[in-house]
Length: 405
Ligand code: KG4
Ligand code: ZN
Image (cartoon, rainbow, N blue to C red; front, top):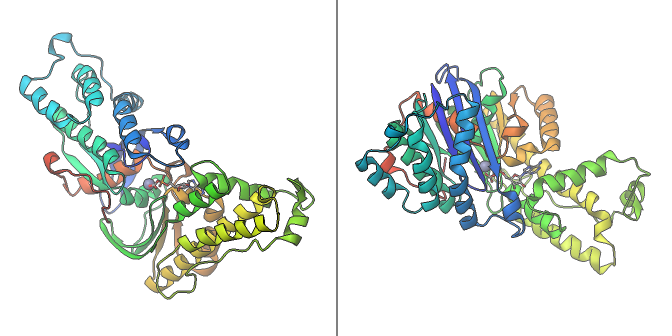
């Protein structure tokens, strides 16, 4: 089965083509193409994602990205004769209605889609939530438009399910159930119990900020650019990597560790009996710590690598500890990591070590490149639904910003 997938839930525009085999029992995948265009440069100057800017960028970029994706997957046919490269008037009328809120996309659609043969795909998968609604709608309306013209069924995919199944793209052995997924992204931090594909139960989640959000907000306090996660990780890596006598700013690492200036942050809810998380307290503690340093005339800039290391370690400690507890309580046979924060190398290393030493559970990590938002993971989840003929009527598709698993 070949799935064309579309992802526009946040600030990445992506179209992928995925070949799925083996059904629900033994699913395996081949990525025929996965084109991702990040809008980070555009949102950076605002310090975060601006929904209407994201919507506009998705609109402008979907057709070029689709073209690239079809081309890479060798599914882009030679142009058909000009005479036939027009839609039926009735189809065109419906299409204009579907894309009436995306005029730039409509124009590019009409100039391109009728000129190519419908590609050999079996279904179209699209993210319908959670995410930014204006951004989600662009992908949804694009999927509806393609479904109309190519006469293909549509699968609605929950973005978080995409992050769960991204690990299936790592070409590992079959994931055994019950499995547990730790999803850590910019908007979510959840532990999900999985009895089988499609059967998800959230057993713990953040009560306030997500782990990624905590990385992003504390990075901002340290005047590091958006998105903060990779920046904090880079600073922390430098801190760990340099020898004790290496000078960072005005200090050697040894001097820094000796002085420390109370660079110690809490591990919120690490001992709570449930599987919930809370990261807003960590953010506030960081703020107070920085204020305190400034009051003592400490140059915070000199200590950025050390502070980043502490922020990262506080987040990792909580994530690892709760995950291990959940694995034991639910006798999970597999543990899956997913979401943008699972790109964090230290988290991957420390989780691997803890899972190996403390449990007999198999750990599945998504390929690093597929941890942040992409359509390949949406196509993967789409396949798991399509094999069950779990399609949604195109006219029934809606964007749900707060869609739950
Ligand atoms: O899954 P994702 O791409 O988008 C959402 O669905 O939210 O996750 C984005 C989040 C951001 O908060 C970003 O700072 C974080 O993932 N992130 C990281 C790293 N790479 C991305 N956090 C920590 N370490 C990283 N290496
Ligand atoms: Zn995501």
